[in-house]
Amino acid sequence: MLIRRAADILSSEITPPEIYRERRRFMQGMGALAAGAALGTAAEAEAGVRLAGVRASPYKLDDAKTPYKDVTSYNNFYEFGTGKSDPAENAGSLKTRPWTVAVEGEVRNPRLYDIDTLLKLAPLEERVYRMRCVEGWSMVIPWVGFSLRELIRRAEPTGDAKYVEFVTLHDPKQMPGQRARILDWPYVEGLRLDEAMHPLTLLAVGLYGEVLPNQNGAPVRLVVPWKYGFKSAKSIVKIRFVEKQPLTAWMAAAPQEYGFYSNVNPSVDHPRWSQAKERRIGEFFKRDTLMFNGYGAQVAQLYRGMDLKKFF
Ligand SMILES: Nc1nc2c(c(=O)[nH]1)N[C@H]1C(S)=C(S)[C@@H](COP(=O)(O)O)O[C@H]1N2
Ligand SMILES: [Mo]
Image 1: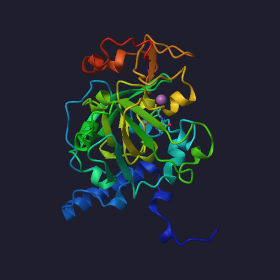
Image 2: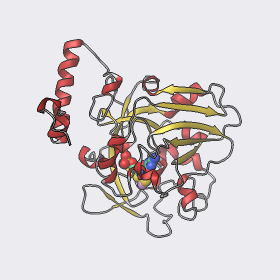
Image 3: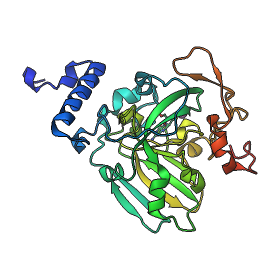
Image 4: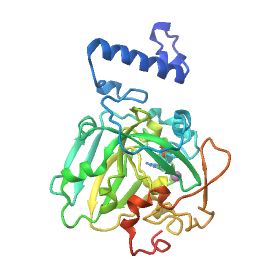
């Protein structure tokens, strides 16, 4: 290896990440004050960069937020490995600029969004949501984003649009996990159109007021807080409106274990374990899992008349 001059070494290589983040935040603050600038440039659109103009929202919780460290180092993102620390360690290879999101299928206005245009589609809000992984752990995360319905309204779905399919980037060069056949890549998820239109359904571009870290699904991911975490597809490149229920990556992998709906439901066990309780990351004792992850008052009417043991 060539010996580099000290001046060539990026500060990120020699500074512990926590301190680096703090320092960058501070310098950004100074820069913004000096230039009167609001948004960072595209080149600065990486984890740790403060998002400008984020509004408060009514979506708050009394629950303590899961610390930033845990939210960004205990992840599921199989494109970067199946271990919980793999995404934080490996997702640095994901390039989030340039990035486009295709909105297509049964819509009157198909469109290819550049990510920086998509970011300005609607005002960014902070929303604190409970998240429940099907594996039995949960977190409370302050996401930044806007309701997916803002994008859907502009797309104008046709009468044949019954479902929405979400597709993650497929690029084994950037996503080392895709070089192994862990899942049928790319990762695909889906919602019924009314679920996708629900105000709680979020397109997230940040957390803790900052640009999404790659391991959390940068530059844009879905967040559906009343469903198990795997419905919340990361690093989305395509949003497709379709007539038939999409085949999701998890249904393709294990249909007897993962259904299309995947609503958080303490009375429907996973075939291999109970779903009655969960461990909130950072807590010692388990908590009771709540129906629809505690969002029943908002979403139960979507499923009126459905047998949720059959449509799990
Ligand atoms: N593309 C993609 N999206 C994904 C996953 C994945 O492996 N690939 N894992 C899912 C699972 S199982 C969970 S619990 C959540 C975790 O999100 P977080 O790491 O931001 O908490 O992402 C979901 N989205
Ligand atoms: Mo999960």
